[in-house]
Length: 309
Image (cartoon, rainbow, N blue to C red; front, side):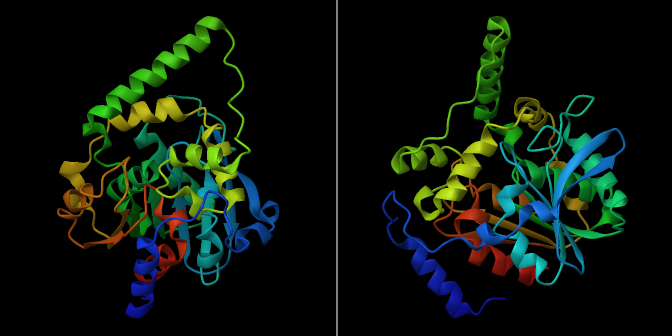
């Protein structure tokens, strides 16, 4: 675990006012990684999955959330790869992975993840999931407990189906899709804003509390990811149909919940409800972070995750 003094320094940083819209921080280390050298496709049953893989050692699997793909883990991949074999996949219908042949379901995603581990020759792994990916990871831990050594959940969408706004968002997204089909011209996604302030505003809509803390290259990548997710609506609908609350007590592996206290998509108050029934669970709240704490405060996030692993 990071020294307590270091964590206190991080907390002080989080409480400072955010910087201006023009990022003036250091060059992001992930920009110097040759990601193309680590990307590959893996055939899993009838599906082809895109993933990145780095490092050697005990395996760690990273599962992204809605409107995302493997690049949401760029701040974690190099840090974990120093001592571990780390894999980050694109779920079917997201990033570089095509839509699945059948309907999207969370149970189906969990089966796909299990099959991927088998295809990679991994018998047991630590599984880290964010938002939708956290729900997939929890489903995997429940259905295939022998595969999951440790479970880390960053703002998992376990209670999303109970939110009234989940029904509203599905209805709005479905209406937009119906209009596109009626017109016969789905159209191109909106371009990524070039002006720093406009881009930061758009990034804030993805759940980032203070977008200016992110390097501009990462802001652009997040917005591009949000526009490359054909599985978004189907996965959002699937989220509403799965409720694991009554089963959480059967998660047998050590579990870590990581949450930002400024998460406006999945409130941090959900953490206590989710952690309570899990026999071996603890919660870490990152002060000042929004819905994507692994990107907003990667040093603190990585320190907690590595200590847990």
